[in-house]
Structures are given as C-alpha cells and as structure tokens.
Image (tube, one colour):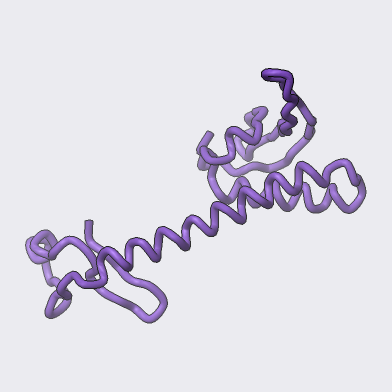
Amino acid sequence: MWSLSTIRSVSNIRARSFQREKKKAEFYSYDIRRRDKTKTTISEADFPLMNPTDMLIIGRHLERLRETNLNMGPAYIAVSAFLRDYLCQFGRTDVELYTFYKDTPQPAGKPNNSKEIQDLPFGVVSTPELGFIYHT
C-alpha cells in the first residue's frame, strides 16, 4: 500500500461490516485515486501499511465531508484515532532510542572520511538541541 504517488482524491467512502461468532464488526472502505491516476480501494486494515502523508490527506478529506454529512463522523474518528496513535508511537520510539543510547560514549570530533564514520561506535553520535543523531 505504500506509494510515492500521493492520494489525489477520495471518491467514495462506504461503511461495511462482517459478522463473526454472532458479533457484527463495522469498518470503512475508501475508494482513492492517486496522482499517477491509479484507482484503489483501501480499508482501515491498510492504514499501517500506508504513507503517513496519504493518511493526512484522507483525514483532511473526511474533515471537509464531516461538515456537510454527519454520517462521515465515524469514518473521520477512525482515521484521526489511527493518526493520533501513529504519532504517539513515533514519540515513544524517540524516547526508547534516547534511553538506550544515552550512555554511549560520544566521538571526540566530526569524522572527516568514510573510514572514520565506519569506526564510530553504534549509538548516539550527536545530541542537537531538539533530538539526537545515532549511528547504526
């Protein structure tokens, strides 16, 4: 589902459901058109496999639709909840990486050639004011 061709439009949103063990589950499918003119149908199950920019485009489209069509509220909530959780997970990843690598010795100076870069220890290489750079 990941594509470098961003979503151009969302043409149709449908509520769908399936039943399993006498429980009904509802989900949404989205007919999208990409900049390269391909048409695809996606569902909520595809969200983790998609480009985050595409998710923002779908969210903005649903936000506009929600103002005129109250039935789009649940679909908008599904997309916005996914985006919120996705961004929180990025924050947790940063904290985990920092916690793991914070005690790694720092190099004395900037490396000047590829041999020096290869000899750097794995872990945090630099700690700028709003983040850190690490070597893997």
